[in-house]
Image (cartoon, rainbow, N blue to C red; front, side, top):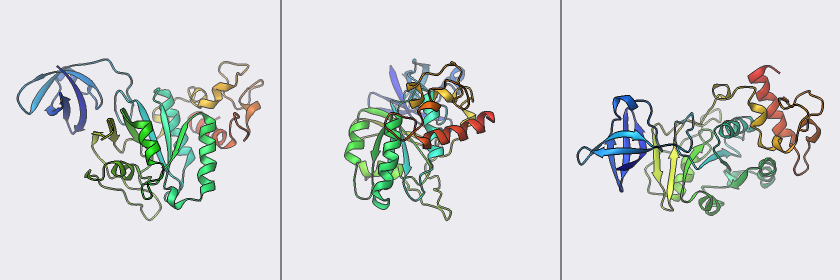
Amino acid sequence: MIGHVVYKKGPHLGVEVEGKVYISLPRKRLKGQVFVGDYVEVEVVDDQHVRILAVKDRKNLLPKPRVANVDIAVVVFALRLPDLDNLHLDSILAILEKYEVDALVVLNKLDIAPREEYEKWKYIYENAGYDVVGTSAITGEGLEELKEKIEGKTVVLAGPSGAGKTSLIKAFMPDLNLKIGRIGRHGKGRHTTTDITLIKTPFGGYVCDTPGFARVEISHFVDGRELPKLYREFRRFPCKFSDCTHIHEPGCGVLENIGKDPGKVHPERYRTYRLLMKKLTGL
C-alpha cells in the first residue's frame, strides 16, 4: 500500500493511507531517511499503526525544513511590523533556487503599509522573475488570488516569524487550531509553530506550517561559488567568463545591465547579492 507522510512529531510520523492517518515508526534501516511529504510503501499493523517499508522516489527535498515533494514555497514577508528585510528574503529565494523549488513571494499586511511601498517591492520581485501577491489577513485583500495559485499543490510556508504565515492559513481555515505569533518589543516575531505538519486545505493540496525557514543562515546551504547562478534575473545576461562573479570581471553582462528599467538587474537585488557574496566568499 502507498501512504503519504503528513506530519512528524518527535520520532513519530503520521502517514495518510486511503484517507486515514496512521502512526508509524520507520524500519531501523530507514531511520532518518523518511520526511514529511514523502510517499512511502507501508503495511498496516493494526487500526492505528503502519510500518514503513520503503520510500518512493522524490521530486525534491528541502534542507530545512526537511520536507519532500514540494510544489511551491510561499515566501511570506510583512511590509510592516516587522519591516521587510529584503536581504533575508533574497537569502531564502537563493536557497530555493538551489533546491529547484519554485517560489511565490507574498507581501503581507497591506492594511498597514503605504500602497507605494507595496508597488515598489512588487516591481522589484516581478522584474526578477517571481510571482508576487499582496495580501492582508485582516481585510482579505489578495487572499482569493493566493488561493488560486496554491490550490491542489503541496506548499511550504517560508519567511520570518510575525510576517503573518499562520494568520494567512487561518484566513482560509478559520476553525483550524493554530497559534498566531505576536511581535516582540524589538519588532521581531516569535516562533509559534514547532511541529512539521502538512495541513490539508479545503481547496485541495496541503500547506506545511513550520518554523524551519523563519531565520535561515545562507552559508549553511549555499556555497559562494553557487550564488552567481541563484539570482534568477542574472541568467538573462551572458558574461565573458563562465565562472563570472558579477563583481569586477570585464565583459560581465550583469554589471552592464544594472538599473531600474524593466528587464534590468534592479540595484536593490544587486545590493543584496554583493552583501551575500561578501558573507560567503569575502569578495
